[in-house]
Image (cartoon, rainbow, N blue to C red; front, top):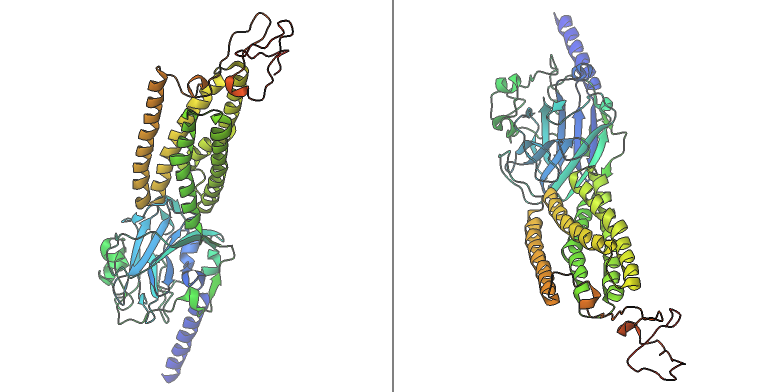
Length: 491
């Protein structure tokens, strides 16, 4: 009998040792923010079922989030924040561009034992996920060696709430990374992040007992479905349970793998986003509309010395702003979104067509003193592009989710529109007819062009005559003081 007990003990020890060897974890960490993932063997072989992950964050974190996907849109996200001084809340959310992700009631997640807040203030959430292989808007291959993930976090005071729909402030930092899930495949533990767990008969069934998970629902309810309702998603580990060590950042897990693919830390993404938004807003709310109105100034040579130089400066800033937008679009993988596409069209027209139309109109005017089709295109295309750029700027601020910016943006846009229209109306009334004051006849240039005389001579513009020599009529032996002529079509 004693020998039999001895053999049973040896067998149990061998089984436990084998389980420890097959239980694998793949981890990623950045600045003490980390995630460790385990794909049970059954899930990997069937292509469906449950996966387990642990999210950890250092003290001083208001919230931390990891998500499946290569960008925020349609990502399967999991936000962790403090429930109280000892417990945490896991809030499954669906990403939607760059607005606050909303609670995903379809998610099936369960917070497991070992979750909570450590004595040093670190957040740890051990999670079982039954909706991480497929979700609305995406899917994940559990055998992928290059699985796409995103992360973000916000520093600040604790939220201290069990509301899975709680509002969260915009992140301080975010980025993307990839995991080699094959390095984290193995085992069938019901909670691979706590020691001495009994193996589960199936990776897709939650065998965690009430002692393994302390939840607002019963153990049988969690075992049945873990449907991701408020009761199962807002659960928190009991303060009496020992909080697990964060595997991704502690290095205590000897079986953990590491991502073999590169990660991208976008610590200056918010800076680039803000710089892009500010530059483009200043250009379309101030520079382009007001610099175009310089054509209505009652001064000579305004096109050459005022309007053109200022618009060239604006175009240079526009190119810089677009470059920042392209960098931002590449980082968040949204170069094909409507805001970016509209922006590319507006910038291309302003950089390529507008200057060319302006130059052709100026050349035409210096020869004929009148307008051309180039001038009409330059005028109305410019006005259309400015309006489209203003609207697209508002869309950009809305996509960024910066409420404090797009409301003032809309107000300023309305004021600029009123000023622009007022100047045009005033100019038209002053001209006495609905004619653009861009016409030099009403702008102060006052070209006094006359029909050619019988001898082929014509009057010079009064403002261009300063350096010209007065023609001497050899036949009359005199100079007509009020008339300037061109001989041989030269001054």
